[in-house]
Image (cartoon, rainbow, N blue to C red; front, side, top):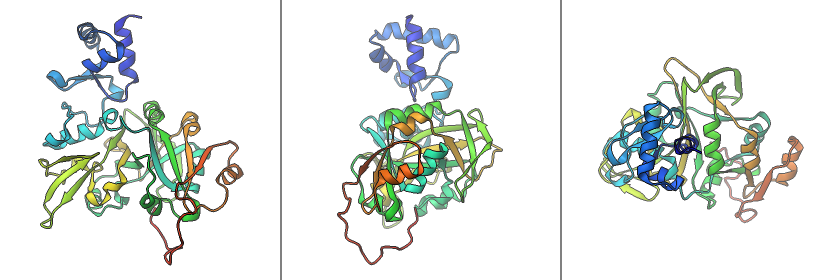
Length: 339
């Protein structure tokens, strides 16, 4: 196969733009040969580039990240402005390179809805649980929506307690990162959804020329006693330079450090101007459902496999929490939790 065709396929299959060096390494070709092919593809308008100099990367329109910035940053410590921060967080290939699966703590009813109806619900930032983020989110228009995942394979009892409620129905969904990336590349439309019932309106939707879907890490800000920003951090890296966390373009990208244990990754939808939905949903293909592992929570009631099969005409991969049947009941059992 002609090298230009090989490179074009590599770029199309990537969820993020690739550098000349990355393309040369993957295709096992010299950088000189790759440069010649890239120029040919650029001249034909089959690919686009972002960045300058050694930081230039190549992609096709559908895999250029939502931020559409002309910067590319690899050193978190040197980030100085909002564009650089967004660029870093949206480079999901690098941010998830050591992550095998993304997990969401939820309840059995939510899982049954996803599998039986074939869609994934995303809510408004106005419903976020971080007060700092909520304050900024209330100032946004109704065009940004999130669904949150954890980029951590080790189970978190804090996450079980916060999000997988009620205890008797608590479960965790795990999706392999490779499948997750393919899923996002395959999405064609975004549907309107009801924030109360979380049901999708399949008759009301937009194509991706009027919406953008992306995956991003979350950064966490640490404030001192004087409420000034001391630093921001992400994935073990710390930045003491960037202070402008109130920039409205950063809504959805930064939370308070109190939530850093969540190691959050967000599936994000941005609607175009003039489109006003209260919530949105995207299709969940069969191959995504087939890849899922459903883990029953520490105090799950009954046999998970049986409860799934009672509602679904299919078998699912299941397992038990490492904490299953190891937690003692406390006086707050039965209290209402915000999931």
